[in-house]
Length: 296
Image (tube, rainbow, N blue to C red; front, side, top):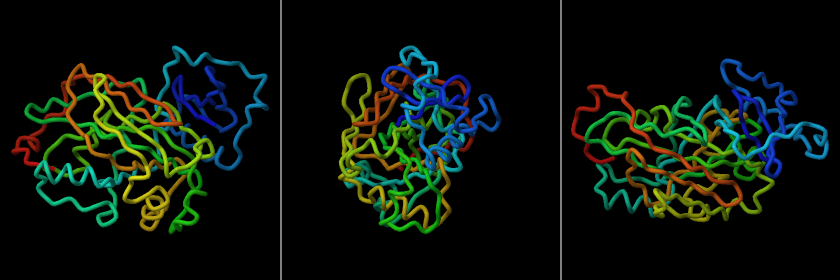
């Protein structure tokens, strides 16, 4: 099952090259505020997934040319794991990080603002911060289907609804990480959510990222320091996970800058791809950014 969003929050299943609107089945009200339709759909379909054979009489919407939106515009939280690949830790050390980076297994996670989420057709808008670089980070998104607290590793996959592509963008510097990663558009998610049953082995998911056709990042979930069940267990040891919560896996080596006019392509095997345009924005300035950048 692949769940997508379109037309102001409508929810649809992807069937080949068509979409089937199932908003009514999930109690989704397009255009509602807050835009929790995607979260409602995850909660509903985690309990009772719709079957394509039961939807044969519904109208079909051509996927080609449809402007898909962020499939989860308003989750309860976005949990992100830093330093979750050894090669990225080595990369940060080589770049002269101010603080020697500890692996995610020893430093835990952080939260990224929900408002940074954007969709597969939205542009990445760079803040107007002269002298600062914005870097891309290729990541796998985990979407929680059944909530819970103190979830064990052994039970973790039973709480996972599915996966999506996610790119974590960050302003390089020494300010608080959450601030540098929470600009609007800094967390594109999509193009849809693929249910976990469509992925044969969560320990063998390949992901890559290119900028203007140049390969920058390539990795596999087999190389994660804290694996997928471990991330769910760690996050839920601190807080109750809710349906629709997003967990970002952390990035492999190869992070690098993007500038106005770049095109970023993230591809994840069995899940999909997003092609994202980078544009220079006019906002974002504040005296907090005036200090020397240092390294992060």
